[in-house]
Length: 90
Image (cartoon, rainbow, N blue to C red; front, side):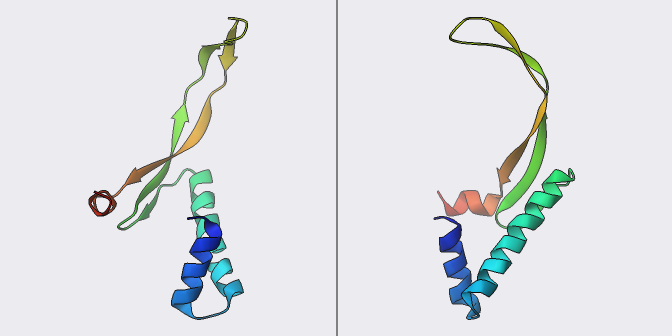
């Protein structure tokens, strides 16, 4: 399933125009992204929790040359599924 499929499902449920359904999906995605950018967790009941995780800087290795390189610290997105989701896909 991709974003277009989700828009089609929302369009079918709402019965409004497809453009309205697309705006609703875009707004939801943008809200999640903006909350994660500001460091907040996003909890969707029955689905799970979106959060960010800090990865510290570390030393890595170039596999081609064997040279040691520095990998910078970064933040990444993380998802923890809710119990209801885990039970639904068993």
